[in-house]
Amino acid sequence: MSHPNQVEESAPEDRSGASGIDVEMSHAVGPKKYLGDVGAVRETLRFDEHRLDSWMSAHVAGYSGPMTVRQFDGGQSNPTYLLQARSGKYVLRRKPPGTLQQSAHAVDREYRVLSALFAQDFPVPQPLALCEDTAVIGTMFYVMAYVSGRIFWDCTMPDLSRDERGAVFDSVCKTLARLHSLDPVKLGLGDFGRPGNYFGRQIARWSRQYEATKSDDIPEMERLMAWLPEAVPADDGRSAVIHGDYSFHNVMIHPTESRVVAVVDWELSTIGHPLGDLSYHMMDWYRPEGVDLRGTLKGKDLKSMGIPTFDEYVTRYGGYLGARFDGNFAFYCAYNLFRVAAIVQGVAHRLQSGNAASSNAQEVIARVRPLAVAAWIEAREAGAT
Image (cartoon, rainbow, N blue to C red; front, side, top):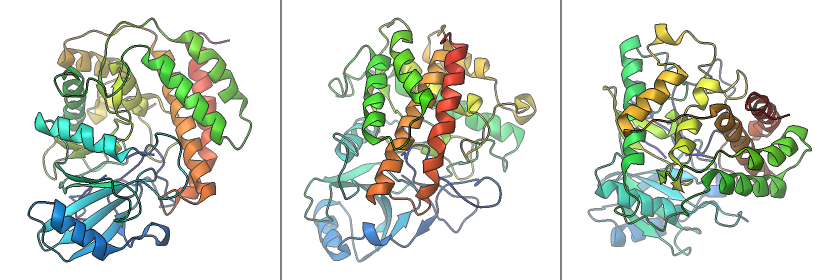
């Protein structure tokens, strides 16, 4: 469930997207290279544009209408819209309509973390205004500045040269380390989540969500829910603001340069362990073939592509952060595959309720079981029996 944003959809060299976490699917021939397609607002997600225009005039500095509203494809968790007005372009993120899981789709939390990070010159879109009044468009929403850039869907980034690809990977790694170097208290986010026992709490959370939304019996998920809580590594006391869905599909790269210009889709951000973010981001290295249309780096000739190996990337991240990480990375791989399986199951549940936001979202349902199987294989590598 992922996942804003932003770019001219007509310019192949300058594209981006709005996504939720790992649920974008496509029947296109071959992997989709970029995110950023924008189309008409889907019928179930329309709202009174004149009322929004009036609200923007009163709450967004410099705004001048009228506006046109289009919707980014993807962003199943929190629908995301491109607003084009006389004063420029904006991006709106809202809670979806319908019955929602408790504490899910917290766009007010997204707005808060964006505000704190933007104040520290961390690369995020500028947050402009939060609206908690559901009478305006039907649900809570916020508006942020439009950022031009590219969001890569295909993790192999086939349009880039070897050197460009390596520079993008390096900038994404450095940006994550910078996020984890920021003090939550100094950011004003000391109460943004509970410190300590991050993995234990996350396993419990996603186990509850899976149980509440499951539609099929998947033995591997049952085994994982039993094994993971007992396998959590000893808490080393590390704590930071973490993104929760840090992946190339939520990182915008400059239109022509190999550097990060914005990190988007902060719905799952919290206070947690840095390895939660790092090992999730690194799913591109260990995700099995065929479970995600973003592709995988597993089995690829990384050296010829200019991409560091799994171990090299971990070492590079540690160098940027000024820390060293040792431990059972197979546990983290199993945990992340399990977590994504549970999240995708939640998306499938919303599909059945009619309030998921992607036009091609039905395809996500078949992904839960193979993710669970892959997670259990990693768990066996980590010592599960």
